[in-house]
Amino acid sequence: MSFAAAPTARHGRSGAAAIQFSAVTSTTNIYGALQRYWGYQQFRPMQEKIVRSLIGGHDTCVVMPTGGGKSLCYQLPAALLERTAIVISPLIALMQDQVAQLSQMGVPAVFLNSTLAESAQARIVREAQEGKHRLVYVSPERLVRPDTIEWLRKVPLSLFVIDEAHCISEWGHDFRPEYRQLKSLRKDFPGVPIAAFTASATRHVRHDIVDQLQLRNPHKYIASFHRPNLRYIVRQSNYKTQGDLLLRALRRHEDGSVIVYSPTIKRVGETVAFLKENGIPALPYHGRMDAAARQASQNRWMANEARVLVGTIAFGLGINKPNVRAVVHLSLPKSVEQYYQEAGRAGRDGLPADCILLWQRQDVGLLAHFIGQIGDGAEKERAWQRYHAIRAFVDAKSCRHLGICSHFGETPKWKSCNACDICGCDTGWLDAPTEQKGKKKPKRAKVPAPHDSKRLILENTLRDWRRNEAERQGVPAFVILHDSTLENICLARPDSLEALRRVAGIGERKAASYGERIVQMVRLVFQGENHPAPRLLAESARETQRLLNEGRSFADVAAIRQVTVGTIIDTAARLIEEGLLSLRDEWLEPTRRKLIDEQCERLGSERLRPLKDALPAEITYDEIRLVAADFRRSSQKS
Image 1 (cartoon, rainbow, N blue to C red):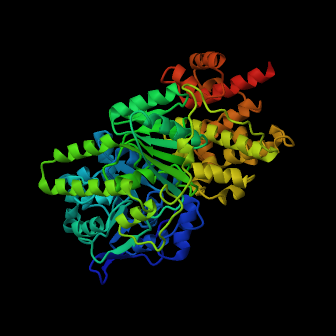
Image 2: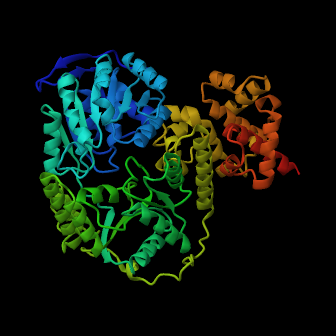
Image 3: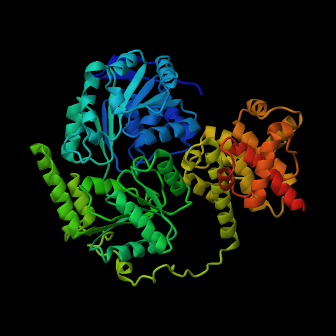
């Protein structure tokens, strides 16, 4: 990757430091970066304008609904600029996921938080001062520390990015006092542009963001709050009817993922147990689970290993899953902003999705009780305003889409959406009788056409491979490849690396790291009947085979081939299973191989996760993958 020449700062008409990047700002470079890193040919609405504003060094305020592609708007400029963007983000898990995704794309990025050892933190600070990273993610608490301000003065900065910027406003639904201190950025770094991003901010909150951060003549980008593919359905329930309504909602969406928001940790556990009793497996997510357990639930849900996740409001920030077909709330949210943000996690692929709010009368009393506990008079008044707004939303007799847009200061021209319970979308299924306890609704078998059958095989093959690769690397599955990218691969059926590079979501680094294996999977599924495995062996795989047979290590072959070690091991496992390569003793200790063989005999060799769980922790996924491939080859012989 070659970056632009080091920039020089100048002061534009706004008084804010604007940075001249004549080479960077060219359309060729911007679209080249979009294709190189993200694998996309076109921007979504507003993205290109925002990117150009940030590259031009302008203070910027962006309000873009969930799923609109906010992160790309600042990540792409950061990838192009020969300086460092500091991203202020409130969640450790969100930082880690975004850094993992950027690293997969080949963009140098790191996070700095308390989960890292002191030595690692010191190294990151040193590398940032040397300009080695394009993005550094920090928490607001970390950023305002005096020692952080001191070392940041030595970093070649491109811009500050404040994510979840509504947290800076006392009028916002999620005010955090530590965000308020970010107003010192203008004083401490007067020449560095500031960009504020949020998904849910009213007009009052937007003005407060600009004032608190002292943005100078900011470029403002406010996307529409109308999500026409979402169906808003509000139904008052009680403790007797809410369970049945939830079952109806989940059985209506048996082919997609669902989020169920529960008001308390106790209700999360009760709801998971209730669904299990009724034949619907569900995963829990709440703040009292340890970090590993929460991450495991999230990863399994993201990888479609379980379609229903029941969580508190702790779940959802940064989640980018396109095929969520429903979001169900089991209580009245604290504000319209909170509801809009959480419900907006449905239908990010643009396809129809249901946002179902099953509130109870007792929710009203509970919200009022908590507001009564607030000691600060001004904050209590703001809480009451939010309370009256969400009550007006659920009690409304007019279009719910219109109500949401109006709340955020948008005035649509239409009066009826045909996509909410008020305007007449179908809600009859909520009144349909449910099945008896413990029984699933019978589904009529569908015989797929031959082409659809192969596409389904390819999709399952890709998902299994992605899950195994994610487990090997210790990252969420969507970091390897997003669901939408898997779908694009299944549609395009690329039978060469050149064709794969044209698939949306496949950037240069992804193609280099995973391209060979993906193309082989496509060929095996769609051409396997006429092209036996030896003929399907690509030139690249033959080269890997030759180098390994020469006795070279996996690391050596990866360096020669300029791919990851994981790609080489994946290819080696495939060659072993096809009988084209022998499992060498020096690749793993005999005792480990014996242990893995025993578990393959007991549990089968198709799924790596059960094997990993059953084996000692020090045995790696790479070792399991190689031995399992050899086990399958031996089983085929016998």
